[in-house]
Length: 263
Image (tube, rainbow, N blue to C red):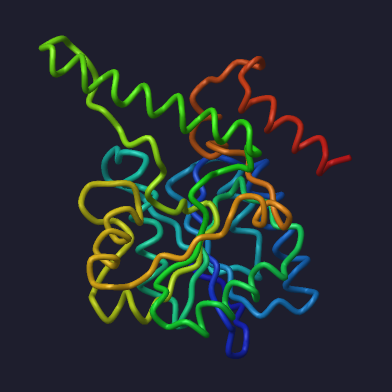
């Protein structure tokens, strides 16, 4: 299902995948609608991943979005369903750039869209632009996170060297921009016949590695800058459906943001 709504020569597309997040989805789209009414030249594409709840009903009621409803024949892993949703949008858009967003991303200042597009347009070697972190932790928390992950990585490596049971060591530095807000050069992707879901990894991860290997740049926006324009619940579209208690940090953050936006 797709709406008949259409911008004249939109500057870019926005791609959002929805799965059972009615409260978050409505806030996300309400904010985008205000920006579009104020002159933001974008097409909004939303995939509903077989939610079968009130969020599906809500999306069907909107005549200003392009809606794709996916009915999976089998239970897909979360990252696979999300990637398939993004790729179903990629197949249909005709713009040169697409912003990936999550339903728990709330854009308050739409100027971030045009700033990002201008940078990509000026530097054709940049294949994508986004943020390595899903929230702005500030300097102290960021340093602590890197240090603690550094010691955890090398602790696991040491245990494995001793022949003890340990989880595989992970990198202590973030290596890939996240899809809660990232802009991609569609022309570059299509030139190499790339999609978002590749390599049985989180959508965009394999894509970034392949593009960097071909000499393209993945541009970075610092959390300090990006979160002046938007908020992100962090795992709101996944983790908050997994039964977090009210004492969980992410649950508290979601509740605080919802109260802020509804107040």
